Amino acid sequence: MNAGKLEMVRGSGNVFRDLGREKADTEQLKALLAAEIIKVLDRKELTPPPAGVRTGFAAADFSRIRNADLDGFTADRLISILNRLGIQVEIEIRVRPFEPVLGTRIVSTGKSAARRI
Image (cartoon, rainbow, N blue to C red):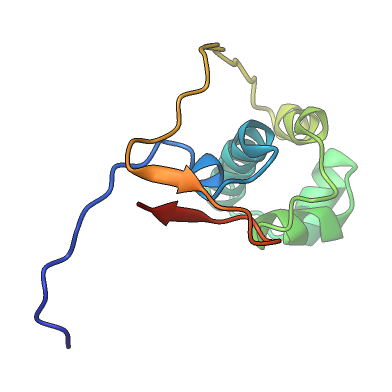
């Protein structure tokens, strides 16, 4: 194990933004909604097949949500799933100018990345 000091870098609160992802805010919203769906499934002890029957969404959708495979989902669809699980969604929106995390710059390498400078 390396005995060197570890340096802590403060994130923005949105891991997708910290990684330089183009649609960071949308990905963050979808991840938060998916996490809520997983909490409801766990609380109600629902596996994908019964969740699908209860909501009318495909059981495969619930498997994809549990695996964080959210590319095929819109925020609207994830909210609809929560609604059909009996959960009301309230979203608070804060809009502010974009400010990069201090000490971090976005580096274009063909893949999304963030690098400490």
